[in-house]
Structures are given as structure tokens and as C-alpha cells.
Image (cartoon, rainbow, N blue to C red; front, side, top):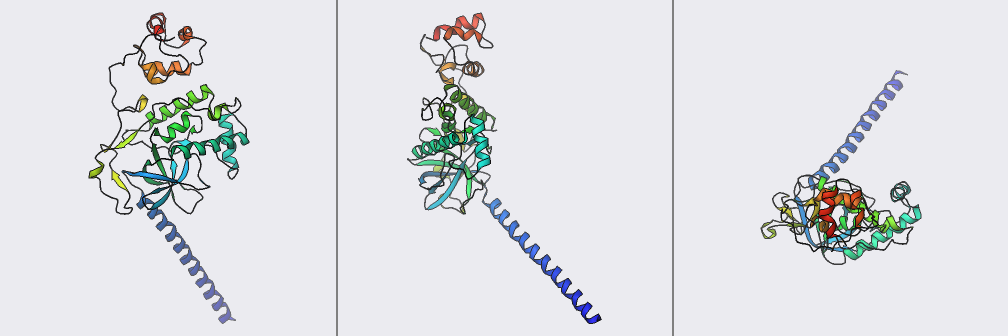
Length: 328
């Protein structure tokens, strides 16, 4: 009897020890995976030039497969969110539909339009700025957050300005900036303009889903002294550049993303500006109108005519008399 009891106790002890070893092994595997991901993340921006879109059924407006040299990656845009293109994630789709004040089927239409918009914009070689930060995803291939530059500027801004994505998502400080606030403000401005113009997701009920906005001053992030950069030790096609001072917005970047602003006003003819369609850049060309006032004018749209400028907060009789002649 005692031998049987001793044998049972020994077996129980061994089983407990085995379970502990299995647990420790599983923990070690998880930790190793986390360390591997952390090791891939870069403190500096990694620049991948001449990237090309890879056709894949999983591509959508804000996430897509791309090649950089001989390697394939999945990139997910920072700070913007385009609607889903199917019903695989119903909870997220419902949230997106609610945000645009449309139905779920309409949200899918917007997602498909965003997918086509991104496909067209990435039909030519583009540049990716990434820190290899894990964006997760359902694919076996790792997905990384990134800013993507097309020939027209930042892809995320283009999507938002055309009403095909919302100002929402994982935040990051863009190359050359000290914090993310200027970019968030610019995205919000673009979203407000798209909403006022009823285009993209904001204009589905009005039949304006595929109506695009006029070309806007999108941000352009550029890498300086590329010839001096060295290849990354883990991906030959990568070039590593410090965010400061290795990056800065180009001279074509305008709006709140500007690092340095000129105090000189560009000249503009009287009676040239349309009160309901003028961009922030055009409004700021008017003497006496700065970023704050331009934003207020844009937010107050639509106007019946430029005579309604007095309704804008901060425009009194003197200000009105000074700026009214510039509008037709």
C-alpha cells in the first residue's frame, strides 16, 4: 500500500515539474518573439525608395503589399483609417459606418473606393518611411506602420482630403517634426473640408462618392544626403536616416506642418478668391488672414456669398473692409 502511495506521489511530482518546464518553454518562446520584434524596430526612420505595389486581394485603402528591392512587405498607414472592404471585421465596420453617418453596405463601398484610390496612387514608384513598428494583422507576413509618399505627397492626407479615410489610427511623429500635433491638425482640416464638400464617404447619399477634391498642398517628407546613408545590417534595400536633422518637410509643404514659415505674403489679385472653395494657402495670401482666421473661414462654410464673412468669429467691420475686396 505504501509503495503504491509513494509511486502516485512521485508521478504527481514529475507531472508538476513537466508542466512547469512546458510553461517556462512557452514563456521563453513568447519572449524571444517579442525581443525579435523589438530588435527590428528602429529609432531612426528607414527610407525605402522606389517601392512598388504588389497586387493582393488583402490590399485596401490603408494597408497593402509592396516590394522594396527583392523583399515583400505589408505596410499600414499611420494616423488614418479607411473603411473595411468586406464583412470580416463587423464590429469595426459598424464603427466606421457610424463615423461617416452611413450604412454598413455604404461603408464597404467607401472602403472599395479607397482601395482603388490607393491602387491608382501607387501605380508609380513610391517612397516608404518606416521604423518597422509592428502593425499586426491577419497575414503571416509581418505588417509595419509607415508614412507613404506618392508623387503628389503623403498618401494618408490624400485619402482623408478625398473623404476616403478618417483622421484616426496609430499616431507617430512624422519625419522632421517635433510632435504629431501639426500633422493631426492638418488631417483634421482635410477631413472637415471633405465633409463640407460632401465628397467620398461624406457624400455617398449625394452620389458624390467618387468626386475628388482639387489638388491640395499635401506634406512631402524627403531624405537629405541619401548618398551618405548606409544600408541597414538586416535588410540591404533599407537606408537609415536620422529624423533630425536627416529629414525635414520640403519647401512645398504648407499649412500647420511647416517647420519654417515665411513672413512675406504672396501677392494675390483683388476679386480672385472663391469664398467656398479657396484653400487655406489661398486664404493666407490675403493680407490680415493667418492660419487661425483661414481655419475659421473654412469651418464656417458654406457661405451664400462673401458678404457673409462678417459672421465669422473675429471678423469685425475693419477686418471685413480689408479682406472683402479679395473675394469675388
